[in-house]
Amino acid sequence: MPEPVFSLPPRDNQVVLQGNLAEAPEFRFTPTGRLLASLILEHFSRHEESEAQRIELRLTVTALGDLAEWCRTLHPGSVLHVEGRLNQKRWIRDGRIRWGQTELLAAHIRLLQEGAGAAQQSDTIADQAE
Image 1 (cartoon, helix red, strand yellow):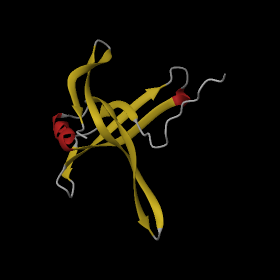
Image 2 (cartoon, one colour):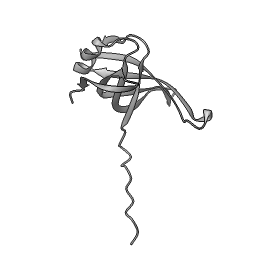
Image 3 (cartoon, one colour):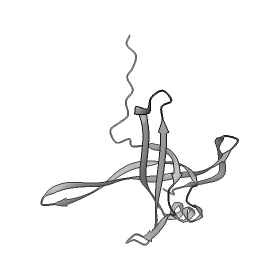
């Protein structure tokens, strides 16, 4: 009997990313009055055996509501663990879809601290209220 094949439904879109906060968060309000925070997260990693497998990523993280309010406590250089989903901004021009910036819509943000040679989780965790 063959092993069952498990695959994620196409609608699943879950991302976990750890990185450094590159600059101070920017804040604004949405048209509906919700606070929105924009953070720039930088991630650098490299496979130990190959320089060709180096990853350098700079990604906008968007947080809303209470999670955005919590982001007011963050400072550049903070090490963050972010969970959420990817979204790519788009618009229509001349009847064609145009694609823009990709962002990570945060559902959970965890502040990490450097300690004893490895990042350790602090007690500071924020979740997006659904």
